[in-house]
Image 1: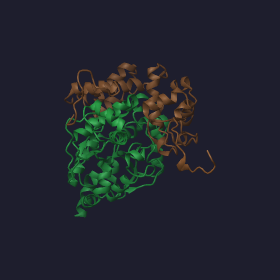
Image 2: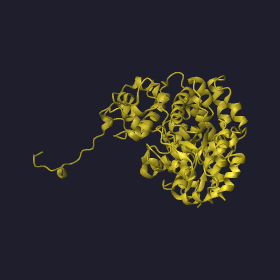
Image 3: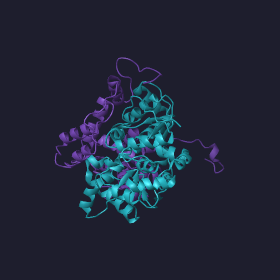
Image 4: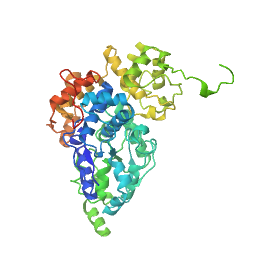
Length: 298
Length: 209
């Protein structure tokens, strides 16, 4: 299987661990992800906050460059902006004409855009099952989707808007126990991480508290902002609200990669702020325990 | 109309519902394509809104203020700057009132009329972000954070975060620059002109950008 890969800005910086683990998992699965040449930023929140035309034009420029080939995205925010632009451009001839003027070429809004979880959870279940070397047995995970994968459903058509399960399904194939919990799609505060962190602390605290109440060992995400807010700010949240969480926050591809036998280095596990080593060793997923577990499988 | 008239025989009269509201509703619709007028105040949006308890208005209240053309109250509201664009409201709205898009329009109007609430750093962030995209094609996160700190003079907030991220290799010092800066410059200029062709020639038709 082959998709043109649109990484987006975060995957080159704050989410480089998402980038690395995505490519590591893809390599194991035989999923080819050649990077879109000369891709530019999708515009993110800043563009749609400022100018609706620019917010459609930046994704359109990228999707035109894909030359009609289906595009795969890992970042939930980029995914949302590319899908939103497609929705506007394909659904409104006036928008399409205006975007054509801005971009300098006509784009029909029909280039398929798929999130990595759609590809893994819908099309590659068999390959994943066949590639599990170190099942995540006994690992209780809260799958956290955040806002932009499933909402609004008319635009993303990702999964059930209120109770998505694609990530749960992928990690269950990998042997993990995904729990039912109520904050799967609540907002973490997103880009207010920079402009008003108090919003992020409040919202992310509620998410961590719910995950803890569900009795999980860790959280899995598929969005650079969600991951950073829950992970890097977890200490600040604990200090502000007088709580103790110590919940590692993984990218879904890091957990899947572990199950498929990728090394900690290939998955950039040392980039996480909440130290996951103790947890992974106790579950036999890192170190000596991991080796004997893999050998037992063989 | 006689009592025997069937619906098929009636001539539909297009109603521009925004004419019932004031000019603010019409401006919001022109800017964003989203109409605030079909809201019937069920308040489902406010039940699910993650920031409805923080601001000076809840989402359904804000929409009502737009319907009532309360320009000053709406454009000076703190709520429009605290909306996280999480899309929960429109997902659950029985009328599909696109509050995130309405808020985008209201932010732009509020800025252009100089009414943005004191203390919000969102406009400065957005400007620094888009300048980075315009210049480099991509956002250089470290550069963006420095630009934001310089502009807002918030030097002491989150002082530990950049070193934390640098240590984890999450903040590359240098960023890639994408080719085609002059093309990008034209794209941004044409977008600012609302899609009108840039002076000095019509855009090329077809082909790769």
